[in-house]
Amino acid sequence: MFAKLAQLEKRYEEINALLASAEVTTNPKRLRELSKEHRDLQEVVGKYRIYRGLQRDYEGAQSLAHESDDRELREMAAAESEELQARLGPLEEELKLLLVPRDPHDDRNVIVEIRAGTGGDEAGLFAGELFRMYMRYAERHRWPLEIISSNAQGIGGFKEIIFQISANGAFGKLKYEGGVHRVQRVPATEQSGRIHTSAASVAVLPEAAEVDIEINPNEVRFDVFRSSGPGGQSVNTTDSAVRVTHIPTGMVVQCQDEKSQLKNKTKALRVLRARLLERKQAEENAKITQARRQMVGSGDRSDKIRTYNFPQNRVTDHRIGLTVYRLQEVMDGDLDEFIEHLALAERTEKLQEEISTAVDS
Image (cartoon, rainbow, N blue to C red; front, side):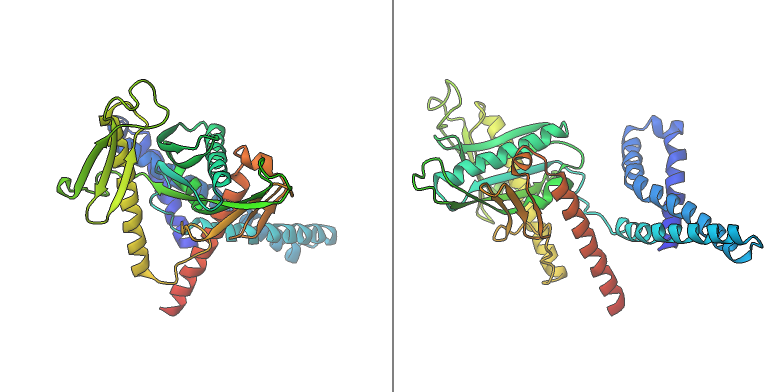
């Protein structure tokens, strides 16, 4: 592990020198590539340097504790040695986790699809509240959000809404939100005060570039039709809505939020490309191992990943057993605690898999 860390530190220093060179500063593409690599290495190299400093201090304290002729100094050095050792252990575990390979798609923009599930109108309202939760999360991080497609309910919710957040690392943060979200509360229309359970599914996809997924024009069918619902004067007067069907897979994407047929077509293809990338990833993962149904990041929509219990002011993430009693703050976009714990759980799981693979081989 430490040999690998030393290599990463050496590479980090090389990048620092390259970023200061005229050859790189005048080459925008190379500058972007090296800047990204620099960002990726910054945390692990920083912690490795802290670890080495503590290790040097620990070795110095150990030496004093065993070799000094001064009894009081030996006792002080022994106490310092114990304190430093207690700090070195957890830091070494952090370094192990930081060495786990990152998802190559983590830095990408993200496309999120929310659909009302069981529960009728209440499920649609909950889907709308989940959208607002993610919208507020994006606002907290100053990330731009764009609605791609929506199918609104008359009572203020959504049967379906698809949106994109364009920011470096957006997918890496929100990928843990994929799955079924469940809400437990008394609906406003419930006269007897009985608690109802409703659900909405969330799919989280990395935005796919054309180089990732090439769509054969001969394998796509475009249908145009008149928009329905809110949208201005052109609604029900022009054929601006677009339905895209990917013939080999049967995937269908429909967009009608824009007045321009071309804009709706562009958005629909963006969603289709992201879905095809997700399908490709799922097939590749299945080939690697059938057992790779880890507790986080699977995006399996059949899994109930989180429950929002309004009467108890409680939010529980079932994958990691984390419960917080501040439901309104979570609904206002305060998701960082969940995301940090889920990211740690994913890294830990991957580290265990790497260790198991190394032992088996």
